[in-house]
Amino acid sequence: MDRFAKTLHYNFWLGLNWFEQVFFPGARQISVAVRRQVMLAVLMLTVGVPVNLYIFYGATEKQAIAADQHSMSEPMLLSEMDAGSKLGNEESGHTDNLTDAPQQSAVEHAQSHSDPNYVCPMHPEIVTKDPEATCPICGMDLVPLENTGDADIVSLAPTVINALGVRLEKVKRRTMYRRIDSVGYIAYNDNNLRTVSLRTDGWIEKLAVKTVGERVKKGDLLFEVYSPKLVNAQEEYVQALELDNGDGMLIDASRERLRVLGVSDAQLNALRDSRDVQQRISIFAPQDGVITKLNTSEGEFVLPSKAIISIADLNNVWLMVDIFESQVDWVKEGQMAEAALPFMPEKIWEGEVEYIYPTLDPKTRSVKARLRFDNSDELLKPNMYADITIFAKPKRKVLTVPREAVIRQGNQTRVITHLGEGRFKPVIVHAGIESQDKIEIVGGLEEDQEVVVSSQFLIDSESSMRAALMRLAGG
Image (tube, rainbow, N blue to C red):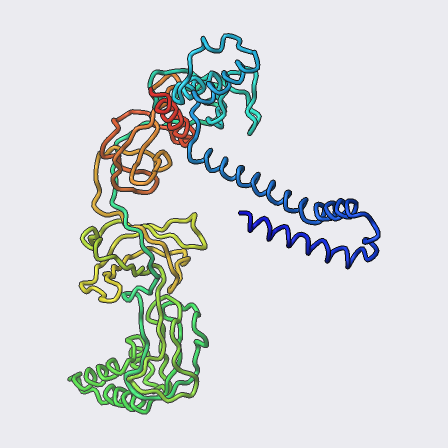
């Protein structure tokens, strides 16, 4: 220790000499005592003060961090806080008989503050004992909070029920259908699709139909055709008529040949009466409808193998739907179905399942079903997409509630029942199938019970808050 002191003293002496030689060249003329005092003052200002400040503030920050960690790791109970406040009052001389007051635990403190007298009807979390207070969120007047004795039951005044717009509906028994929702596309009814072609080769002349989509009536002229075979067959028929010897076999054979070649009975009768061979034979529309295909033009030479014109009747159409593999057993022919188009959701078309195809698509794992719909107004256009609902396997006399009355939360389904006199209680139910705006109730309700179908979420939240407060208070 003596060696360290000597070394420190020597270094200090060297520093002083260096300092006075650099900054105070004439300091040797001053007395040694004064010189030392000046040097010590300079060292204190340049070295001692900064070091002292660093040590002081560093220790203060460490104490603050340690205090924060201690408060986070060891929270004080309400009873300890009360005891500390009592001790402080005793030290300051203000006792006020605090030692006689019982200490409150955390649960007792929560219980004393969790029994409010007034609550906001729109925000159940706003509670107070001040009868003149208003809700800080919506500004509504607070209403008395009645204690029903049951944590789940909520009692509301008639004015509050009217303000919330609470609507009730009774549980009823109805016929429910298993509902299959899918998407399909509209197609032509193959039974109403006709194709016009020739039974002999020839040239198309005087084409009366010009474009696809034109509407035609049965018997309208489509086109005229020139065919040497038809001309020869007409000549043979006329010769048979002129050479008729009463047998009639030759006339019948030549007439049947013209019929096979596509000449109508009306044209045959006209040829029999006039006996004037026509160079061009007229082809007429076999039914009402619209032109869906036009595969020719005037002057074109066509063969019997070519389909020239297709005509579709749109008075009823097919709707092709994919049914998932798990739902195939639900669907049967003759079941009722509904269709809605995206651009006209307010209109519903009613039809039926006409045919279920026997094969399963290996890629989509679905089976195609064919539905038939009346389309007299022709709003259903082929290749349009439509939303399809098939009602399969009806269940009769089942308990039902409106869809909007059901509250789904996780794996739990519940409704709010009306017990009468403004009292409401949530009830857990077991839901079955859904159809349109109704849901089947398998268990939890009875017929003619009243359930809330409007503002039920507000009542449910109020009931949940009451139950939580009672659990917190140990009730």
